[in-house]
Amino acid sequence: MQVWKDYQAQHKDRFLNELLELLRIPSVSADSRHNEDTKRCAEAVKQRLEEAGAEKVEVCPTAGHPIVYGEKIIDPSFPTVLVYGHYDVQPPDPLDLWTSPPFEPVIKDGKIFARGACDDKGQFYMHVKAFETMIKTNTLPCNVKFMIEGEEEVGSNNLGIFLDSNKERLKADVVLISDTSMISLDTPSIDTGLRGLAYMEVGVTGPNRDLHSGVYGGAVANPATILAKMIASLHDENNHVTIPGFYDGVQELSAAERKKLNEAPFDEAEYKKDLGVEELWGEKGYTTIERTGIRPTLEVNGIWGGYTGEGAKTVLPSKAFAKISMRLVPGQDWVKISDLFKAHFEKIAPKSVKVTVTAHHGGSPYVTPTDHLAFKAASQAITETFGKEPIPVRGGGSIPIVALFEKVLGLKTVLMGFGLDSDNLHSPNEKYDLANFYKGIETIPYFHQYFAEGSKK
Ligand code: BES
Ligand code: MN
Ligand code: MN
Image (cartoon, rainbow, N blue to C red; front, top):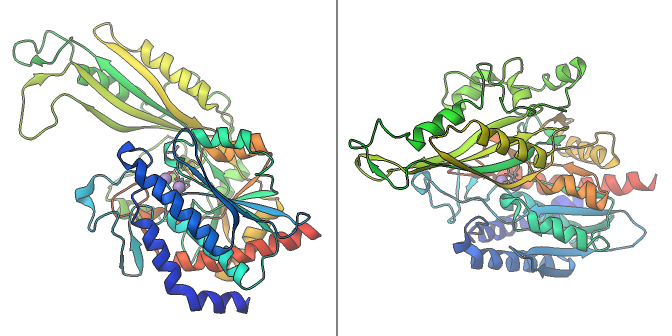
């Protein structure tokens, strides 16, 4: 629509500057030293929603970081879109690998570099600006509710509680989220699924104190060695996960579905080059697209213990630790998988050490319905502004609250993401292309328009 185009062209620079301001707030949810920043970020989001034209905007406290809510009800009989996003970000470290400081955004080669640029400040902010566009041009075709939370990157536990106690306020017809990727601006795609997650921490304790590795080494089991062996045994020679029961109930796709899935463009040589690896790795019998979309996996996120400082220290450590996560697919339950992991890890521990296994958080997988009116609206909106129909693909990441939107609120979700897998989410030098940011702002109003029109039929 021309009025949208004109409005957005006129306010282009302000949209960007506002985003840069949000990116300067280090709202790292995992790190309690940033609790004040996180709160400040929630207040900033509130202010932005109000300026854009939302009403009843509120920073809702939780036992953890606050949730920002706002809405615009133009007519209660019209359909309502619940927009979800998160203003919290991942920790920025390792800091020395950033080419510019993570919370001092810079624009280079048409890309915004900053922690949260894509995940998810840059993406949820497109919705605020698309909403502003519709409000200021008097073209909002449906009701909109915003729920922007501050704990997505740490599992959204308090948001689950918020859903339970705010069912009336959150009543809507569909949830719309931009917090996933597309293949590229030339090849738009829509994620039709998210994997679930079970996140564990393990500790292995050997002797009651760190020991001289010459005096005691060779006579006492080294917890770091034991932990390494235990972790290595979690995959077999075909890279299947060895935890008994891990694959029970996993929904397999039909041959036709797998064929369709693998039709999405994928350049293996380019993929390897981008990552700097000579060879890919993964579960035997599955392609890379399948390994990262429809198959469950197990990864070590971090492993530590003993001396890791400068130089050398000859020591046999008393303790070693690891953080291990599993990505889950439909048919797997994260609580059950956490229990299976714990039982297995305790069972394979030799008598020479003691192990502790604790579950951090988790979430269920979700598959979006492609026959839903809102999916069709998203597909149509992207076709309108990209000039190409988006390809449906399965996303590998997780957004734990999405399964609860369905369970608690009875709502389906559409994942209309505008990021790229190569945006360095959770890595140093996270970025978001300006082109993607503006394309998102341009596309979102069409979603609302098509969804509102479709709902009337
Ligand atoms: N936005 C991501 C999830 C994502 C990214 C999905 C790309 C699909 C494609 C989200 O912020 C995220 O990182 N989620 C965490 C989950 C969590 C419980 C920490 C994840 O997937 O690791
Ligand atoms: Mn995210
Ligand atoms: Mn993330």
